[in-house]
Length: 239
Image (cartoon, rainbow, N blue to C red; front, side, top):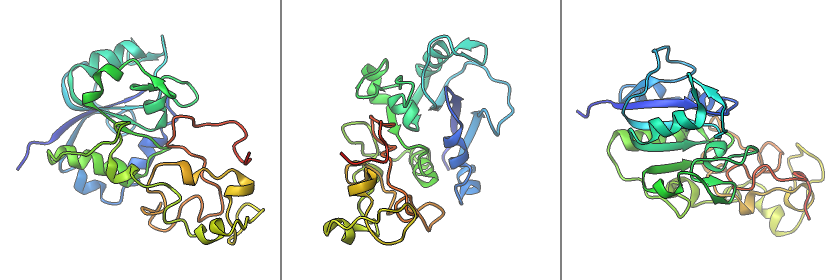
């Protein structure tokens, strides 16, 4: 029996969407048997202190002089980063910076402050990432199993697909038939509604939300939320 994975989960500049996504994982009670959350801003009330951990999870973007737990945010992350064995940048803001433009490894498409330390970082973009994605990474680390990463340090098991793969509207895409109306069951949303699914990495139409749905299945175009350029201008328009 392995000792429990010790995790510190820090909220940077965030909406807490990643935390709420994680808490919707259907087998979360089983996962908790493998991990020990030393600190989490939402569901753990332990007093926070700077200490070593097996996994540091950062949810949200970095920002200078943003106060967090008695420290400027960037100073807090720096203190914890080098005490952690591994670091998970959780969500698009932590990975690429989102609308703030300051992620751990990247500032949008440019190299970020911790790029030089990329060997200890796993990136899990998404706004938010699917709960199964989050639990997959945590479980693999808890079981001391190797996670194969792509060139952007994202798990290949999740991001070697595009959101377009598995979309129920693919036949309409091939014949260039657009649905013209949000929420309509028939038609593709690529041509008139700016759907980013063919360009966006993620298993959104393979691992469905609540086991039943995705944006495109519900009649909303993919917004490319796992991409470095999210959130783009003219979101629902196709050039």
